[in-house]
Amino acid sequence: MLKSLLNLDKMITPKIIIIFYWLGIIAVLFSGIAAIFAGSHLGGFFSGFIGGLSTIVIGLIGVRVSCELIILLFNIYAKLKEIAENTKTKP
Image (cartoon, rainbow, N blue to C red; front, top):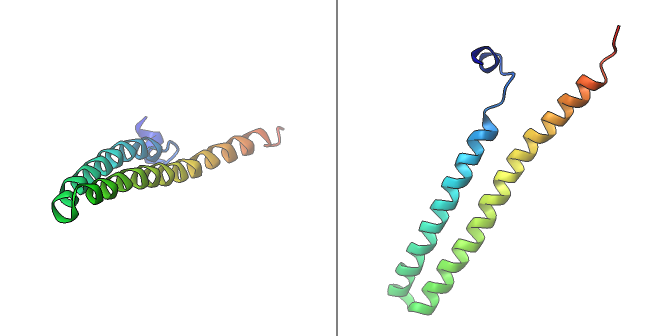
């Protein structure tokens, strides 16, 4: 286990990305709720609600897409590694 981590044979970043994904979701939800309450005090309830709701929707989509793109890079790497292992010439 330690040897594969020290030799960089095993990737830990995809697992860390999942943690960042959930932290991003929590941050977006809190930001959207805060925008709803702050906007309702500054510009009325309707503008605060629309602003907070758009923050939540756009933020959730942004977090999802960015994490998927990073995971996609690691999946491409894994498939390329598998292809390289399958195409090695056997003596």
